Image (cartoon, rainbow, N blue to C red; front, side, top):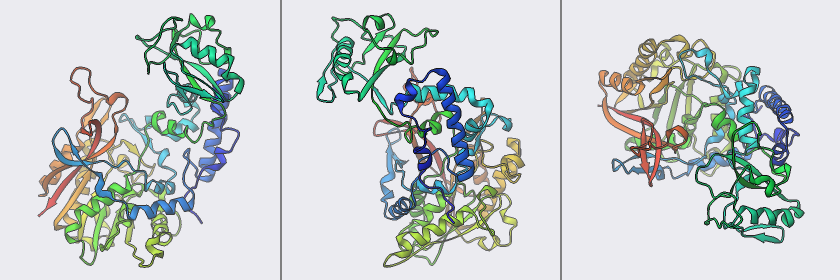
Length: 525
């Protein structure tokens, strides 16, 4: 039996996967009907076959990706923060290792909380399954699929662009030149079309027969010019007479482009925040860096108090040198259960250790692991875990950020056991860290990836509380590493007055502002 989903070909090949031009030309009623059918199909595939709205890899592609991990040059992730001149940034932009997500189809069912009322949390799955969210879904879907907000299928036409369709080409300098050429010549090929994208733009070239726009300036026309330019009705599908929008960009597209798989990105990026896995290659980098001084000892025991979605376990399995790694993970999530006391961790770890060339090559070598299905605040009570006391060579995890992510509905989840932050800090965070400190060897490191979170516009000090507790337990704070995330999006752009990003944790690499999550480094002497 396979415990992972594969490439979602059934949805991609279904009638629900419309082309961009089909959706562009839909009326509001037709669009609503399509969205209802799309949601129904996604939920059915998800519930019955474990296929979330993602593309996925087939089995051989998963094996190839896991093989690539073992020789991946993770040292290339090291970057210098131009603000501090310190080489303390880890910038991993690789997707290698992400295939492990396919063992965890519930990732996108994880509810994300923005307030302390956990019943208000929502998951991406909720947007597909809940009738009360249909209205919001329609708004987001119209933006991404009818208006192509990610520019997956249509691009603005600029002054000076050389546009070729069939055997004809044009380099227009005014909107009129483009439209005249397209309607008299290019439309006859029946391979492309254009549409008017509503926009509010103060400085635009405007439609003027005599105006020669400078190169790279988008063609913008006004509502009053539409009739004069004799633009066909099928190009006006996104113009709403009830909305007070007066300017439009011309966007050109090729007919017949399917919305998915490219459209899956919209669900993950802007419908709702979603749970993400820890990057396996970043975990591999940290394991190799912080065990390098004793890499030749008989066994290196690594403890992960919150095993999560398996990214750190995969990173441990992929370490490829003389080290003998033994990964110990704890997590109470029963959604991960498979059969006979096994979990998804067992299934993908055994897949890695039997399917990749690590097991089947000329010199086979695999790493070992042990999984406990307890919360990290309870694990010290398990006699089977107590054998590791004083024997851990490295502790590295990314614990729950209080109740930010509701990983499951289990009563053993820390956000359910400790519903107030002070209770969570003492009952979960302090107890977890106490176990870590007691079980860690001397002359070894603890790495703690955590960040402050906001609930009801109040910031909770998870970072400082973690530092204070570990110092109280006698560990030496060695500073932090900056795990770079994507380039600043949306609300995290730079402030218009200071020029600095509007977020707490940011760095600058290769002249790009990047948000980061801290990984705090502690040493037990």
